[in-house]
Image (cartoon, rainbow, N blue to C red; front, top):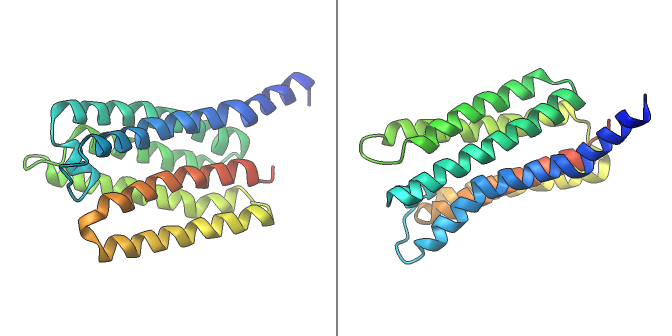
Length: 193
């Protein structure tokens, strides 16, 4: 392996991939946190209902998901495909990106409610599938495996809280989407290559 190839790999691993995850997090979760803060006195049950309050929030949400989704696609290409050779994880990320864009473009309204809900559910499903298949492709060292399993437990606990406290479903959504990025960091830094 040439030195410049190793240097490029280290640059991507240490700087670019975490930066792509950060931008993706800020685009997707950051806009949700902002919108929820903006409407803290007009509390709805889900992030989608907050986004549908006005056109500005909806446009911000759609733009954030577009930028965040693209950054995650680049991450998925470089990490899952280039570094680990997994076309399946890359394809799952691509399909997840498409349904993410549909749920972001169509607000949770009377007119588009079913489209939005189905695609939001599919987006979350693809995220979970990626998280369940990724450790098969990216072997995680034992210390990082504990973190990965702990995050799975947090997902299960969050799902139970969402089920029993539907009024504050938006809180479970925030945890779900935020923790996804922690999973990606565990894969990034705990993976054996």
